[in-house]
Amino acid sequence: MSFEPTYTTWKQEDGNSRWQSPSNIALVKYWGKTGFQLPANPSLSFTLKNCYTDTTLHWSPKTAAVSGMTLFLEGVRNEKFEVKVGKFLSHIQPYLPFLKDFDLRIETSNSFPHSSGIASSASGMSALALNLCSMETRVSGNVPAEADFLQKASFLARIGSGSACRSVYGGLVSWGAHQHLRGASDLFGTPYAGVVHPVFHTLRDAVLLVHAGEKSVSSTVGHDLMHRNPFAQRRFEVAHENIDALIPILASGDVVAFGELVEREALMLHALMMTSQPYFLLFKPESVAVIEKIGAFRKQTGLPVYFTLDAGANVHLIYFGADHEAVKSFIDSALVVHCSEKGYICDETGAGPQALNR
Image 1 (cartoon, rainbow, N blue to C red):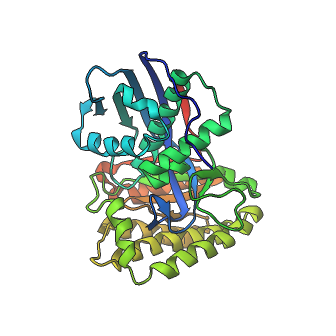
Image 2 (cartoon, rainbow, N blue to C red):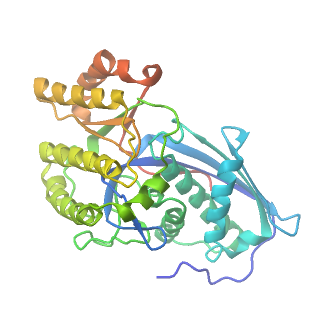
C-alpha cells in the first residue's frame, strides 16, 4: 500500500484548515517499537470526547529559499515543539511533496494538561495530520474518498506519534497487525470491526489529574528502553493474547472480565517501566492511593468501576453510563483529595475528530 501522491502540480495560494481531534485511552497497550514508528505489539483503544486538541494550520507560498514553520501552543510560540514537528514534516515529505513550497503557521491548544500522560501527542499529531491532509486536498485539487482521507491521515499521524493513528477514528480503534482483527495494520489505525455489546457504547472515563505537570520520562524514551527490557518479548506475546481474550468479552458484554483485563494491562505497562534498564517510575503516591480506593469502592458497592493508566501518573477511572451519578459522587467525596487542585475531567466515548474548517 502506497500513500505517495500521483499528482505533480499544486496551487501556490494561501489557505487554512482547522481540526479538533481527541485523545484516546488504550485498553490493550502499545509499548515498544520496531522498524520506523511501527508497533512491537497490537493495541486497542477507545476514543475520548472531551480531551482533545484544537489545531489550526495556516499556509502560504514560501517567501525564502527554505520554507519556515512556526508553532504556537496555547498562544505562545513553542520552539521545542517546532523542532519535533519539523522532524515530523521532514519524514512525511515524500507523501506530501507540496510542503517544500509553503510556509506554515500552526496554532494549537489542548482541553487538558499537556505532557501529563493523557496522550496529548495522540490528539496533537492526529489533529495536525488531518489538517495536512485537508491542505493536500485544497492545493492539489484532488478530493479523496472519506475512507482514503482518514486512512492517509492515520498513516501520517503514526509517523509523528504511534498512538495518534488511533485518534483519527471514533469508538474502538486498533493499531497493529493481529490475526483476529480484520483489516488491522502496523501502518495505520483501523476502526474495530468486531461485535460490540451495547454496554460498551456507554464507556466513561473520569481522568483524575493526580499530576498536572510534565512527566519525568517521555514516552519516546520509554519505548526505546523496551529494546533492553528482559520481559519485552513475553509482553508482546501477552498483548496478542489479551486482544484475543478481549474480542469475545466485547461481544458478550462481560464488564467484569473487561475491567480485570484492562487493569492487568495498565499494571503491566508500568511494570515494564519499572523493569527497564534504567528503570523509571511514573506512578505517584497519589496514583496508588486512587487505585486502592477504586478497588475498595468496587468491592463495597459491586459496581463495575476499574482503572487504567497511560504513560503517566494520572489515573483513568473506567466505568459505564448507568453508574455515572454514583461514580461522580465517589470521585467528589473520596478521590478529588488526591488530584492536583482537585482537578478531574469527566469523559466518555467519542465519535472522533471534527473538521471545523476543512
